[in-house]
Image 1 (cartoon, rainbow, N blue to C red):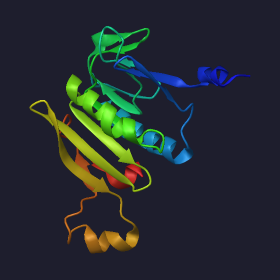
Image 2 (image 1 turned 60 degrees about the vertical axis):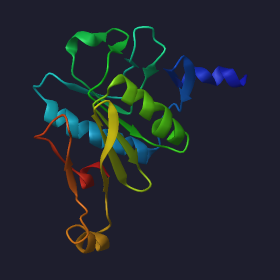
Image 3 (image 1 turned 120 degrees about the horizontal axis):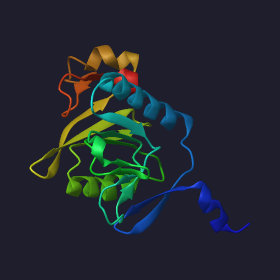
Length: 185
């Protein structure tokens, strides 16, 4: 068996025409976080036009196919852009849960790509630090809207109100949706 025989097990993303191979499966912590975020959005979006997907759908950011991503979680709001191959358009919100093999791609390559295509909101979730960086598109550039961290029980009482830490936040695209950090981690 050659090393390339295993490539069939990997999902592939294409950014600027360059192929990036993704790990075939996430570790349990990574998977739980993705599942928790999916559940929050799935519950909220019930009966609404937008849909939420995990890394089960290919998102084609352009018609040429030179930018195809498979976000950990994406909120897709244009029903006309679904095809048998995936979603041809720009998601309203994307969540990437970083891992040791994806940090640079999620923080730099995808960050700039999502910003350039106009993804309205982008979260970078760090499982080890139990934090979410929420970026919101403002005049074509991402602005850090907030960093939300799950604190342990001893720190919660000491830091939440006294130091300005919050345990809930809202998305920019759904003003009625409040997300509790503890439900994600």
